[in-house]
Image (tube, rainbow, N blue to C red; front, top):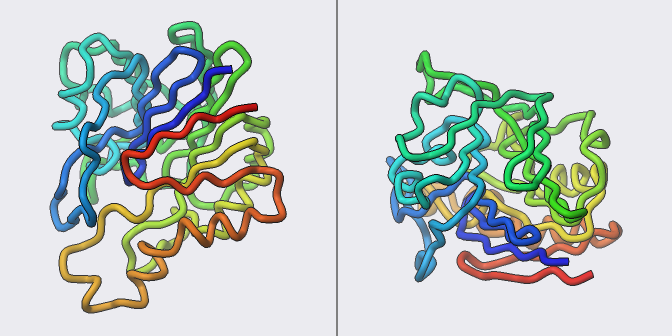
Amino acid sequence: MTLAITWWGHASATVELEGLRVATDPLHVDRLFHLRRHGPPPAAPAYDADLVLISHLHHDHLHLPTLRRMRPGSTVLVPRGGEGLIPPGYDVRPVAPGEELTVAGATVRVLPATHDGRRHPGSRIRGPAIGFRVERSGVSCWYPGDTGPRDDLAAVGAVDLALVPVGGWGPTLGDEHLDPEQAAVAVAAVGARWTVPVHWGTFWPVGLARLDRRTHQRLFVTPGERFAAALEQDEARALVLAPGERVQCER
């Protein structure tokens, strides 16, 4: 079995799945609007992917400057309604929840997510927020995108690797994100051998850490360790990575 993951920060990761390179919501910048990356960025972020998964149209998940640097010819799955945003040179496939397709020998199921699907507040460009289950040669991963708690996660089916969002940038997460404890419940519902917490510890609004230290600790600093602690009684092994760190999963 070949299964490895590199977390680049935020929701951006590269999953190596039986020879297939899958990128999730690529975002390789130091600053985005009012958000600043904390800590040094990865020395050499990967732009090489066979398959790019875009979970929703927000700028921190569909980041056009980063997407333009991805390898030309890559297949990009994007929520239906947002395909016009994708730059030329890619195999663009608009998708919606409930669809299943085959890409480079992998079976991809498109899953529903509970999240705002607009490009930005007031935008006419919108599409459904989605997640993905990708399987190739019997090896599988689940990336739910940004979502709140859902009662249909058992239908995803057990996977080898889960990439689960566990944080955000406040002042609260609201009902369209998972906190670390909710994320642990979601992983238990799906079933996974390994799980990597994402969407935490990377970007934070400029100046907010000084103004609201408690929220910064709760939503930015501690989600990874709290998620791992919440999973202690579950069979899934939590892999809490630093940005740019790669780990290979062994059976």
